[in-house]
Length: 309
Image 1 (cartoon, one colour):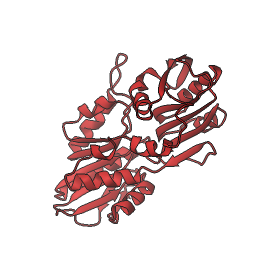
Image 2 (cartoon, one colour):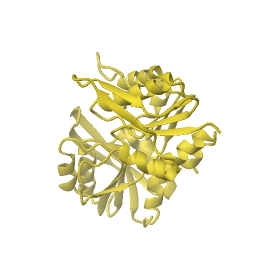
Image 3 (tube, helix red, strand yellow):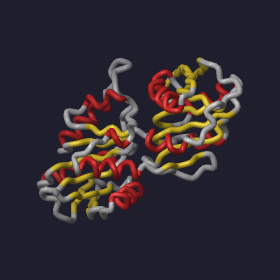
Image 4 (cartoon, one colour):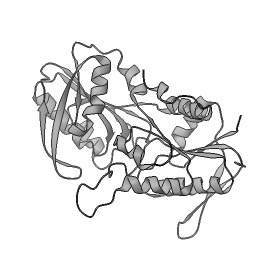
């Protein structure tokens, strides 16, 4: 069996430690040097020759998180690693997946090109903002789904009173998977934006009178969409509104928005660390799912079996 090496980027150390515990393998050692102007130079402190190497690093802003991952991949490639997998729990820049206006980048495609050019042989991530980003890569992409984490948490629901909702039209497929699994109804919140992170209006499509509504989304940035949707649902007669969201970006006034909103609870994973605790936010760990996925990759077993059934 080929030797396995797990390494953590600086940003995702908290999650990588839990993944390594579930996997039963200590994290590899590396150090980061910087020139006086801040330029990074990672140095892997152990041999990776002929090894299966997994680098665990989410890539939110600032861009140093992505740059660090690219440099680590390049280091391992030049040190003759046999197979390099970039484990990216939260894939940054995924929201820019198409040209929706003139003279803008398709940033997700650029990031895909950079990861391949650096030397990654495989990508492992969870709940991409858009499924089609998998097609931006010419290498295998293991696209894990957080339903393996959220479904067990939601199993105790009273199916008679629960209804699932998508906070926007683009997330209907994601929310429908939950509604189908729990054999519940689905409603849609149709939002209109004036500009990024600013919602002008919200319309609810469907009946939520007397229902306990669960919003389903892939990420919460300012949480404006979730909070507006919760307000609109309560105005339409919902009994309660909670939300499940894979990636807690939570920038700007997100915490203030959530704590002052109609949301009863926001359930997230630990693909990104919370900036501070909140009485309304519950964190479920993704570490066990990633540990199993890494083991199945190494042992050439099915990945989809972990979250599909």
